Image (tube, rainbow, N blue to C red; front, top):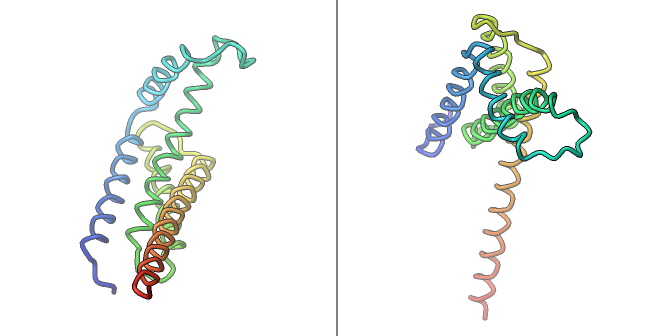
Length: 162
């Protein structure tokens, strides 16, 4: 077993925090969840233009559904980002982060049945998309930082040679 460093412990704690937020949001009754997203959709509807081709009376319902699905993507992107960092230094960290996130997504959808909601397989796929996006962002950020560090080291070594 790999030693857990302070940085790794931080990302494990962040992963657990994101999981707790997902759990709490999934524990809400469907009426409350819909009311919250429909309220936000109503606010956004004020900003929307009528040229969308969607009747104004249906727009808040469509926006509400879209917001709920975007919330899935955003939360699981955060989870994927945190899990990838939590598995830092472990061989196979990308598949491990994906597997943990998908497992949690399945557990979350099952959990929703106990809070008067319906779990959907489509939501697991949406959660997977969010996870992959979060992992992709984490890898991209890591690549940029490594490239900048290499560039800086190369400049410093050239300066020493002069």
